Image 1 (cartoon, rainbow, N blue to C red):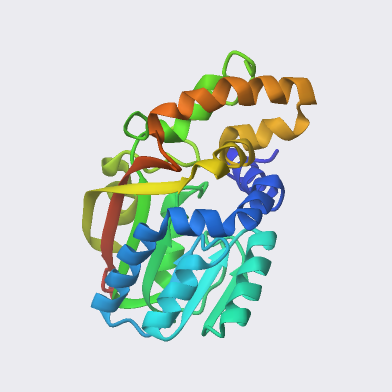
Image 2: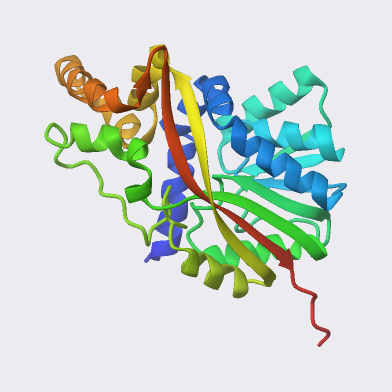
Length: 284
């Protein structure tokens, strides 16, 4: 019988190699621009580390990977999504950036031991089925003392923009899957105590978890595309008939009015900046 961890891994692979991955590829410019403030924070952290080789976990279409490579000299992005890795490689090639990419589950992939000087991630580490095992694997691929810098979401109650679409669509989609904080997903690292336990149990020390609140924006003209292609609605709407889809869009769009400011949609992203260092390996 397949255990829960394997089911979760399979579900994540299917999701990010299916519609979710394709949506991120199609909307990569929109999403990279929206999350640009976090990219800058991570690039600044890498610069402070004077890192020469960096691993970007859950790299998606490679926006952060390329930005870090331009600053650090070389960055390797890893992601489970084939469509996103393909897009990342193409974009890096067009830009002539010294970035490379691996399609793999970072929880299981056999990285070269001690190959990296730092690890970064922008919203890419909340989807592991076994976080302790995953961060232990990441620890094995960095040198002693290497820095870890990850941006993760705080809870849904602090990020109402992120749940607006599903709350407004709930009357039409009673079977919409509920988010569970103990399962892989956007808010899996909302509890800082859990994050601390995961890192402490996987070979990381000097753990520091600080709140970061950043104003993000996207064009109002892209709003409907955003909430119909991404998140829970992006999973269920492709299977809905045209009438149901139109009713949902009509109901959901006004729910975003509090975030619309003229030609822009603006919201505060409530996140954690997670920092740690690779603990010195003990001699046996």
